[in-house]
Length: 86
Length: 162
Length: 97
Image (cartoon, rainbow over all chains, first blue to last red; front, side, top):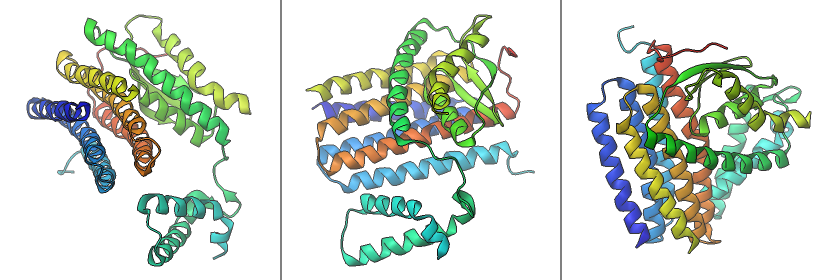
């Protein structure tokens, strides 16, 4: 029961930070919202794995973590260099 | 091959992590894990290992465990004050430059990472042993206070050891 | 029993993280607030899950995830703030030492 409500709350939090990603005035706020969504994806997958007692979902959550970390690092380095026109 | 023998600790750690992540003890998996660990150890020759051995000065494991629990306590303590700050809506960021006493790059990396991990402060940039920290208090004397706080919280663990 | 208390604490952190995104007007305060409270929420929730699934293979794997989050999450926050700072977005008040 507690785990189900935790998953519900995580999904609501992800959709609200998606709103921040749409209306955010600068690029860095969109990156911030991407970071929030990526961390909450890891949490959601691990809670679901414990709820269903399936160990393979925890593997998937580790790989989602690696993908999110690489995406944020590479995107912000690209923005720091000045985007595409340089 | 001699380099692999010299850096056997890295090889052991990589193999243990391989078996923790796969949890499968069939013979094909055993051979695969050993081969991949040898290749990674050989490829990271110039980065972590040198002719003389390990590049960074090694740390005591007991110090790291003590530091980890101290870090957890600090995180929770400062997160409560941060929630009060959200409710009251006072938020005025400014930038402090801090000069540390240690010069080892590994220790500086650990300290910068844990500064970012505690709520309310973020490390922006580092240059040798000078950190640029973005923090959140809005009085005049706070620049000195933040510096003293950080030195007292994190740095004393590594200074006392020598 | 004890994991339910930890789960309730993590709900409080998640809700305050969402409020913190929309409450401040300065960009750096938003960066500081949301990312930090979110990290604390992640740590609390993972510790609660470890306590719930006692000494099984689950708790080992969850401990690996906790270790991974504690290393990579500060780096991604740091690199976002560094990219904003070096691009010349000014902090409102600067105090040199």
